[in-house]
Image (cartoon, rainbow, N blue to C red; front, side):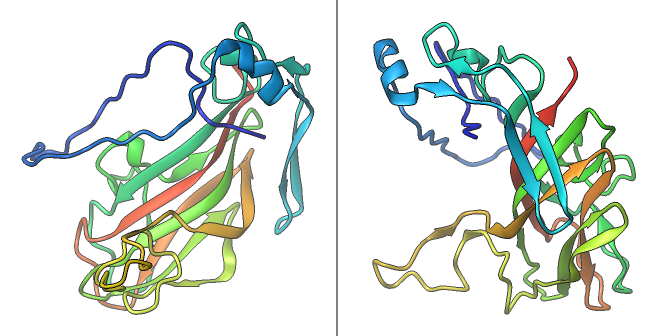
Length: 242
């Protein structure tokens, strides 16, 4: 199920600055493929449905039903990732968040929720309260630990259960969910050493559908300072209503 964004004419980027504004240079990079319209049928053929999103860890499956779509110039923007899709709408999802507040210093759950003031912007919220017509298929989860070293664990909390069950240790010194710049964890002195890690893919994706799901972190008993954690989540967003 390819959810890559589909464009036919132009792309516009919008960057949101924090309260202090952007004071330095930055760069936007875009990777993708450009096709001639007469190439589309040969390259893509027909997109077949139904498609199934399977959460093996929780024993849940969401079946997405549509008519098959022959890929042409006219149907390009109706494909998953296109702006003219029919229901269900299937799009890529990625979201980043900072902890706006300090953690509790008691190893309790810190939830990245906009409605409780734990993140600065609604687009940073990692709390999802879905009915049966909304779903998120979580495929990747990453976190950059605080330099002071007080982050201890990270997990998904879905329908009251933690995943993984014992939460994942994500300390500064040993963090399997690290993403972004590798320094200072790896010194980039050799050509084969990467400068960046992508958002780590989960061993098994998780489906949040008709329930509450969120990302939580815990400290080691000492507070993590505000804005010292960066969390990233990616996957597939499903909307089964207009």
